[in-house]
Length: 398
Image (cartoon, rainbow, N blue to C red):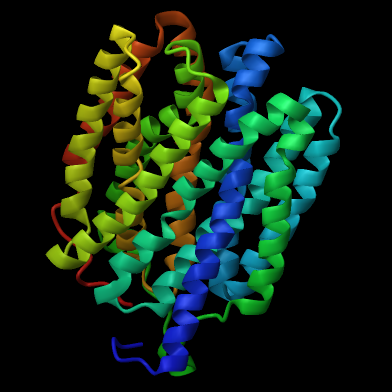
């Protein structure tokens, strides 16, 4: 597809992008919902932060188990039915979680829902890369990467209030409705992007992991940058409530605003990468900024000032900015035959780290407090800076 593609093809591309964003947003609402149950579980039901963090990490643990499998399936059969089928299964898991008796059963359904919702992560990125040319891919992937902060925004604005008034089952109505509706919409509206012609696939596709260390370095950088991102998305709300004494609803609004600003920021860095002709240079800038802003948050948190909420908004904006850059560079370097699997590996590493953040940072917060835990999270993006590759994926095969 070229920049002057026929109108129907351009329409399919933007339709696929819009539905891909909506699909992953709905999946993210489900995955994020347990984190916004932490105030209820911790302050009202007596769970420790480590226990509540473990329950909140269950969906991301589930995603780790299936991301590569969903990506390989998308490589083989296309994106449409992977996205639609995964969302339908997520809706079923949500119903199970709403009816669950006890925290073990609840955690199991969160795990199963995460396994299902992983379909949107691998396949929606692949469909965007397949439909958009390189000179607009940073913009398109930046829009697609709005999904995660938008999903967290929806969860932040709905789950705490619904949980407070009706409990866990009522709080899960929103992800149930969204995943069910989007499963139907994606089945009807997504068109798989063009695939290589049979003549082009007679030879075995190259393995991008053997040709250079580029992908491995991007995966490692992304794992490190996930730590501050999930530290704030998991514990930002409960920090506002317990340390800065914000009402739960107000804290949810603050987190929602931060996630929305972060979503817009992802578009901005995507456009920037198109303009400078590189994904990795802006990625390095984000890593430097993430480390600095986490240290700033630790300093403001120690003061106890409610102005720390403003720093939290800035921190949550900066720490989500890397995802689109990393995703685009991975897909470009992997090529069409490996994009689904490479994006699955990319997500697997990120969600392995994300799964560990809940229980480990919860334990650390319980021992040393929020300020030192935020400072510890700042170490990870600092370690990522020298790992960012110095070359770009100009030799991509897309």
